[in-house]
Amino acid sequence: MSVRVRFAPSPTGYLHVGGLRTALYNFLFAKKNNGTFILRIEDTDQSRKVEGATENLIATLQWAGIEFDEGPGKDGHHGPYIQSQRLTLYTEYAEQLVAGGKAYYCFCTSERLEEVRKQQSAQGIDPKYDGHCRAIPIDEAKKRVNDGESYVVRMRVPDQGEVKFSDMIRGEVTIQNKSLDDQVLMKSDGFPTYHLAVVVDDHLMEISHVVRGEEWLPSTPKHVLLYQYFGWELPKFAHLPLLLNPDKSKLSKRQGDVAVEDYRAKGYLKEALVNFVAFLGWNPGDEREIFSLDDLINEFSFERVGKSGAVFNIEKLNWMNQQHIKVRTNEDLLPLVKPLVQEKGWTVSDEYLLHVIGLMKERVVVMNDFISACSYFYEDPSAYDETARAKNWKPESSGHVSILCEKLETLTSFDAPSIESALRSVSEELKIGAGKLIHPLRLALSGVSNGPSLFHMAEVLGKETVARRIKLALERLQ
Image (cartoon, rainbow, N blue to C red; front, side, top):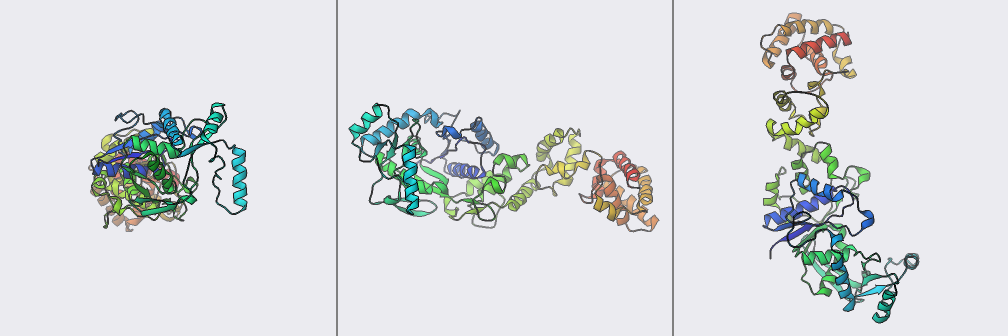
C-alpha cells in the first residue's frame, strides 16, 4: 500500500505549533516511506474562516521546509483540496446514507435541543441527542424536506454493540455504541460537519494513514462507523499526544505564544523550531537531540511516539536554537542577520557584520539577539548601565582611561593582541590591576558590563570608534 497522508487545517488564523507538529509528522512519515503528503483546507465552518489564513498557512509550512506534494495550487488528481469547493460531494454521500437507513433527517429546533440538554444535565446524564426524529418514516421526512422545513442529516448510531479500531500509537481502542451521539453530518446551511467531510475526503483522496491530534480520538468511532456504512476500507490511525504547558494544562495562548509566526518573529531558526517540535512526543531512542530535517526523515517512526502529553518547554527550545546557531557558519548567518540590521536603519559592510556574527554567535539565543544584545556594534551607547557604572567607574577611572586612550591612539596595528598588550602596559605603568582598566573600557565602549571578548570587540569597532567612545564616556561619566 502506497503511503498517502494529509494535513488538514481549518483556515481560522495562524498556524499553531500543534498544527506544525501534525504537519511535520505527516511529512516525515511520507518522505521516509516515499509517499505523498497532501494539504487539504477544511473550511466548512464558514463562521470561523479568517481572510488570508490559507495563504498564511501555506507560507508558514514552506518557511519551515514542509513542502506538500498535493494541495491548493498543486493538483494531484484528487482535488479540489478546499472543502468548500466540494459541497456537492458531501450532499450526495449524505443522501446515500439516508437512502440506506444509515442516516436520517432531523427537524429539531435549536430551542428543543437546548431544552433536552438542560434536562439531561439536571439528571446527571451526559448530553446527547435523544433520537426524537429517528422514527419518522422516510416518506414523511422527505415531504417535510420538500415543503421547505429546516433540517439536518444525522447518522444513525446502532443502539447496541461496540466499535473497535487500531491506533498506531495507542493500540486497540474499543468504544461502546451506546456512548456515541447521533452525530450531525449535514448542517441546515447545506455544509457538512467535520465528521462527514473528513471521511468522504480521506476516502476519495486515498489517504492511507490518518495522523492527527489526540482531541480527535473520541470522534474516531463515529468515523469508523461511517467507513463501515459506506463499505470503505479503513485507513490506519495515529492520534498524537496533547501538547502541554509546563503546569500540564493544555497548551494555549493564555500561557504564552502558540503561533509559529510568533517564534519566527522572535528570531528562532526554522531548523531549531522543527527540531524542537519533532521532539514533542517523539524521540530517537538515544541521547541525540540536534537533528536536521533530513535526519528526522531518516529516523522518524510512530513506534517512538509516546501516548502521554508532551510539555512545551521554552528553555529547551532556547537551548536547541543556540545549538543550531552555533553550528551555522558566519556566512550562513549573514543573510539572516543583515535584514535585522537594515530594519534598524544601520549601515555596515558585510565584512564588518561577519566579524560581529563571529563574536556573538556563541552568546545569542535567538537571531534578534544579534541586534538587541549588542546594539553597541552599530551605534554609540546612548546610556551607561547604572550598576556597572557604580561598580566599575571610580573617581580615578577617568584619568586611567584617558591615559589608555592616548596609548591606543598611537597603535599602528589595531588588532586584539596589540590592544590587550597596550592595556596591560598602561596597567603596569599605573601600578594597577588590569581589571581597573578592562571594566571601565568595556563600559565606555558598549555601555554595559558584559559581552564578547573586550579586545576583539575593540578590534571590530576600530581605532577611530574606540577613541571617540572613550572621549564621549569621559565627558558623560566624569
